[in-house]
Amino acid sequence: MSTDYSSLLGEIPHLLRARAFSDSISASELFSRTGQALDEQDLHLAEGYVQNLGLAHVYPARVLHLAEAMGVAEALDFDPAAWEAEEQLRSSLHHNVLEQTSEEGSEQLLKLIAAKSAEMAQQAILDSFAHNSQIDETVTNAMVGHVVLAAHCMGLLILSDMDQEQVDHPFALRWSLFNRGRWPIGITGSSYNVF
Image (cartoon, rainbow, N blue to C red; front, side, top):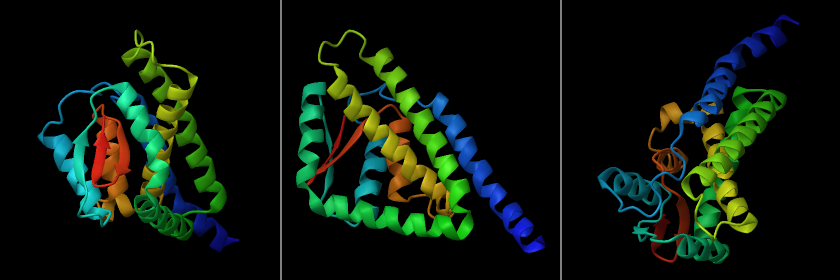
């Protein structure tokens, strides 16, 4: 019994940090700078993302309009190299998470992060695109889905403590772009498309 208790105490710090991340999503500037020119920090984060993902041939590319962003989002299905690189990172983090926390504890926190990020993404879309006639259910679902996935990956990073060991982890850098009001849509060909 004492071993179980010690194990529970050991996972509390990880769960508390993940909860703090969930709470911090409310302050994120989601979608507030879409379409604007990429500034120096945007470029630094985007370049770090592709380099640390192992895709040195990929470079940041600014997406100008929502219609273009949706076209890029639809084209992501055709870039298996980027998808495979991210999938390997997600799988590795998930394994690390289960070494730090119980499956039940991590699942509850990841559900909380998903719900919070979806809620805040939907509100941000309303705030940033209130007068854009292109916003419909399909577009909204795509944008929310990207935020939820990025927040989920950031949650895995925190629950595994890798956010402290690798501050320039691709998932941390991608979330930072979302947090700065951008939509890092994904990689197509040699471009890392950022709206």
